[in-house]
Length: 397
Image (cartoon, rainbow, N blue to C red):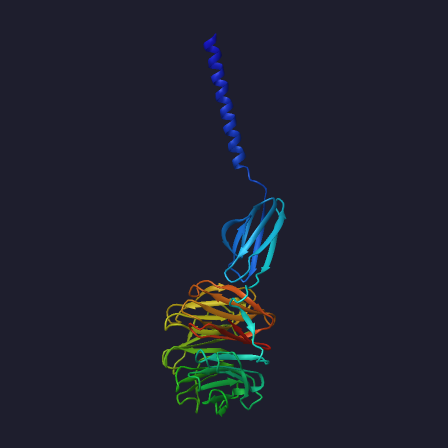
């Protein structure tokens, strides 16, 4: 009888343990009530802490959060921490857009008070000497790293759309109705150069004191081999508008465009200084507005629909590395071989500054400006960068 009782107790104990284990297992697999929190910040790539715990996630990103009261904090070097408390219930989806506030004395974009005109092009030949060009032939130059700017005039009412300097003293500018100007005295005065062209010229680039190119509407490409004193047309093979040109040597170069409605993307490449321009297969229909190479092999293009392209074979082929949404990206600059800037706007609204710090593999939105940005320039290793647009010039310092 006693043995039977003991056996019964053992069996009962066994079933109780089984039931407890089953209960624990059922509870652990039952989904807890959660909501979705979408966290965005300007600039992006801020680290997200949830309830004082590091999530390891960077903005923009989403979090699955248990229902109830919570707090998240965003941290980013050079900016004040931003903390938000919120309540969420089961199946809720809530979004936060946080504009981070820079710390005093940190690097950020600020408007240059001496430049009160729309700027379409900016170029620094050295850390000290820079020049910006813009509407109605207006020119602004600095000889003290941008601490002050002096306004000059090219002697024209045409808009100057691009500028290229190969030394502090010698530079060229181009603009509407085919105008080209040259300076040999640090931008103090400008002499008109006969282009033999009446089409708008959107970009000009000199690789050295003699060899330069200008591109513009209707597939127009002009080349000079005598420092801009004379210009000869080259056969681009296209009638599409060209927005930008870049050469890494006197023979290897690229041109991009297609910004007029219905034109479609165009990429051209030459290995003969432009004697022959070859089309490159377009990646999409979105137009391209600027091109930049940091070596003879590695280069980037930017354009509409936030499109960013990267090439690792000298521009023979291109791959998209980012699409930054409804932005018209208009210009590129390299601060180093891994630190890049791109600027543009929301199709005529706010200006946007994008940045990559990993060699152009990934990009994030760094800052906004109140107006459209058309151009950007940076000297490798310099403490400052420059962007021009509607209403003036902006400095990153």
